Image 1 (tube, rainbow, N blue to C red):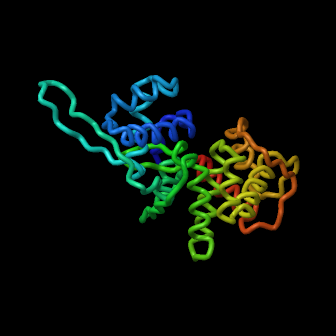
Image 2 (image 1 turned 60 degrees about the vertical axis):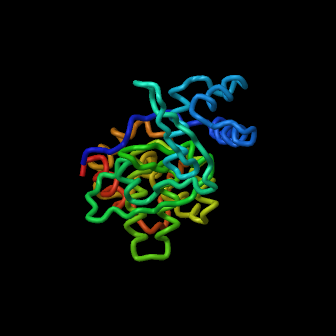
Image 3 (image 1 turned 180 degrees about the horizontal axis):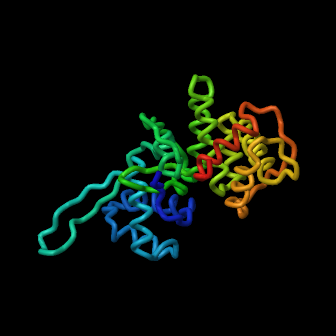
Length: 255
């Protein structure tokens, strides 16, 4: 399946995101319209942000998340862009973190129904989000945690573990952030076990799996995979090492 992922870009700054929001609030409090240009001038004079493309990127994400409202006003001058006025909504920010987000992050499964989990997040979650095809997708870390938390008591949990195993193995993630989010949602044990089992498959000198050929191909493809967890012994987990090989092999296209 062709990946829907956008190009890898640096996360936005939480501090700048907060500054953009505060600038809009400050301008309104002073009786000024928080237009794009006035927000840019406010931030530039305080040495917070001066690049108009960067500001546009921040504002687009904040509007898409629902925490800002954009109102466009036409101007009398010809060939001049409509005036853009921003205002806080006291809502959000909201991001997409369900199976739709998993597909966005490259899940190599064909799903008849793409479940949607729209969740409220904080400024850090917003700073890691990306807009693609008019949807604001949460980071891979937030997507994994939120989907695990949403399905942990449902019949779909086994499938969710499969998807999370595939994505965690095939992508480098911010494991500190991942575990912090997992702890907040009380799914840290599942995430830790997934990381441990992946580490076992990638680094154990004597892995107990039947399909050694596929495992070696997996190791070849994931030679540069960054892992903090480094357990070399398999544990009693809901997914066996052989199941993990099948899952990761399918994700990488070698099974």
